[in-house]
Length: 69
Image (cartoon, rainbow, N blue to C red):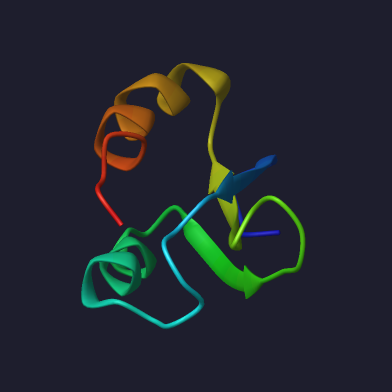
């Protein structure tokens, strides 16, 4: 867990194919992203995110969720 960021979230992302796309890798550049993991099943990737508080989630999700992969 990141120091000063006690709120953790695991976000499942469905991406076309299994390859790393530049757009998908751009998500790793956000400071909230602590890790990216390739998985089997319905989701292609799971991102581990850390936030300071729940109030910080909504502004970040606006950057993250509509991101085309």
